[in-house]
Every structure is written in structure tokens, then in C-alpha cells.
Length: 259
Length: 290
Image (cartoon, rainbow over all chains, first blue to last red; front, side, top):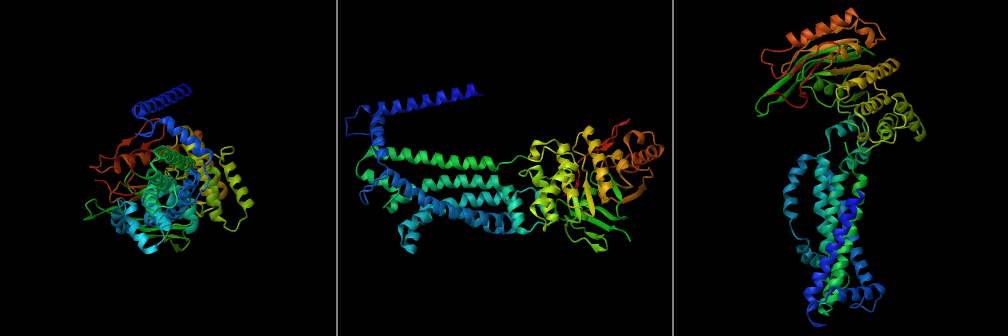
């Protein structure tokens, strides 16, 4: 209903205005340079940063655009690698109930480990901090996709597999035409959870490794006591998280089917 | 030599507590000639759908075997296509894609164009022109089963296995699709083994009707020959004395001989007049009754 939609938008804007006003009121009393910066100060920084997003004045002074690009690059490599591994392993486990039951205890133990806990081992073995950060992303986006894929494949309706068996479809064709499309909604749900947790993990990983990335940027600006930049970066991280999720949301709507 | 032979097939399932086993049916033996249309009728739980799955190769018999053209059935194959009660269409595929999947499987050496032409032919045959790009969820039950029939016929199987194919289709559409089935069967003369609850449907379509006693421990009681000349029409059938004789015979069997004294879990809905007679209940294709 368009009327309802309009009301939602109005309410949403209203909540935004109230939040901004509350923020301004809370920090407004403090003199400039002391206390938390208010929304106006952050907005000024935002305009300034967004007008030169890609400048590069050496290792400790790069534009926010470059920093975000560095983070997204790491995310892409780690996430894509993890997704490929997770979908392949998930399909294998989903098709074999015995293997699934044998492997599941290990997955359950590995799943709740914070991906950052692996960092020392990665640093020690690989001795390259940027690769270690990518591996942290890998670990953070592995389990949700793996678990969802295995579940999705294991719960494919018997009927579809029966039809595939009667038609004597070859294994590659069975996989592409039946198993993957049947499990696609569950797989994409896993991919969606994974990209969220990967984006959460990258900020923390970059704070640890330093060098480049939005996480490093946040930490560096804190060291400079540039809190407006920190707050702006926080907002940018949130916004990009929304965009990543929306992209996979579109994919999931395209692959959804009703019986 | 028999075309399709069901050779003393028995099926047992483990009991729910896992300690024993229940024989759903025992020693079912009959054969079907090439091009013959044979229907099996019986109460829910007599294992007739299980038997159909065994012929399809989707389930293994506990004893006995199925022989098609002198070779024992060891698993599913393209010479035996199934039309499922719940249609079993791929919901993420369009109507055309569902049929294309079968055509390509049957003719792996065909070009894209040959496949497309064949798909179009079968779409037209079941009157689905215009719905090619729709997904099954957008179709009625009758339309979906037309896709199921087109998919099955498009592979030109030796044997068609129909598992209560009209049970989930409204009564008015059912008649139309039954006629389409007969037309397609007359044209291709596939051997057909059908399982149903519907007495009228069985008489209208079949050359012979196999009657099963209720399960567990179901047995093949008798096989009736339907000596009504084809083509048969519903209108003529109603006044045909042979039809009335068969109908009464089967109903008596299902009501008197069919029910064991303790078999009160079989809900029996026998309507009067010209409505189809249905024996309702859930089928035990994958388990046993308490």
C-alpha cells in the first residue's frame, strides 16, 4: 500500500531527526575540542573527507575511499574463497548423512571460535599480516555458509532427487540442475550471514594488523584524537554493511522459489 | 513372454521400535503385456504405491523381483517414467524447462533446436501453450499434472507408472485430463501400471484391474478384466451393464472382503450415485500403521 509506505518513511525520518537532536543535545554543552563531537562537526568532516576520498599522503594519511577499498578488497578475496570452500564442503556433507554426522561435532566446536582468535597462528605461520587478515575473513565467513549449505542440501525433497534418478541425470548435471537450485535459498541465506560477520571481523582484524583498511583508519584517527573522523568512519562501515547485505538480499529474491 | 513381470514381490518395513518388521504385502505376482493398461486398486496401507516405487526402481523389494523385457529391474531408469501424485515438478524451473530436462535426458545427442521443437510438441499435446514460461507454483493442480504427463511421455518410456495421478486434481478437471491421458496412451501404446483409490477411474482407463487386500500382509486378491470396448466415454459407461457389474464387484470387495474386522482405521467414504468412489486415508509408502 503506498499510503502505508509513505507513513513508514515519515516515521523513519522522524526517528532519524530525534536521534540526531538527542545526539546534539547530549554533546552540545561541551566546549569545542572537549567531549564528543556533535552531528554538525561530524557532517563538516564528512564533507571534507568525501570531497577528497582517494588522496594518498603516505602510510599514515590516506583518504577514506582508499581505506574502504583496501578493506573491501580483503573482504572480496577472503569471502569468495571461503564461500567456494563452504559450498563445496556443504554439498558433500549434505548429500552424505553419515559423513555429516561424523564431521558435525568438529564444525560445532570450530564455529563459535572468534575468527580473530586464529590471528596469532596465521601471523606465525604465514608471516604476512595482510594475508593473515584475509584468512581471518575466510574463517569468519566459512561456517554460516557451510552449515546452511549442508542443511539446505540435506533437506532437498526426496521427490526432486527421485526425478533426477529416473531421468538418469549425470552427476554434474544433477548438481547444477537439481541440487544447487533446490538448495539455493538456504545457501544464499548462509552467504548473507557470512558477509555480515566477515564485515564485522575485518574492522577488528585491521585494527590489529595496521597498515591499511577502514579498521586501521578508525584506530589511527583515535590515536590522532580525531573523533569526528572516527564517528564518520563508523557510519561509513554501517552503510557499506547495509549495501553488502542488500546485494545478497536481491540475489536471494531471484533464487527463491515457491512449491 | 510377459513384457513387465512382477515376480512374487514382498516388502517389509522395520517396525517403529526397530525390533521387528512388518510385511506390507507378500508374494504379489502378475504380469503386464506390452501396451496394456493395468490398474491396482486397494485400501490405503496395502502398499500399492510402494509396489509402484519398486517397479520404478526407487525402492528395493524385500523378496522377489521385477522383470522388464527379460531383464531384472535394478534401479531407476528412463524406460520406466513415473507420474507422481504430488506432481514432483522442479519448482525453480519453468514449464518448458521441466519438460526440457526430460527431453534432454532422453536424447543427449539432440541439438538445441531439436530439443526445443520436441518440448514445444509436448507442451502443445497437453494444451499448455502460453504457459511455457510459468513456474509450477503459478499453475493449478490440473495444469501441473499436465506438465507431469508431458514430462513422462516426452521420454517415450516403455512403461508409464502412474501413482494416483489424479488424486490432487479437482473432479471436473480430472475427467478432462483422464481423456488426455487415454489419447496419449492410445497414440504411443506405452505399457501403463497405475495405482488409484478411484473405482470409476480404474474402470474407465484400464484393461485389467488388480485388487489388493488391506495391509499389512496385503495380498493380490484377484485381477479383473475390463471387457468394455474402447474408446470409452463417461456418458456411455454409466449405462453399461459391464461397468455396473465391475463397479459393484469392486465396491463389494473393498467394503466386505477388503476390510479386516479390526481395520477400522481405514476411513471408507463410499458415495452413492455417479460420484467417484474414493477410499480415503493416508498411504503408507514409507512406514507402517500402528
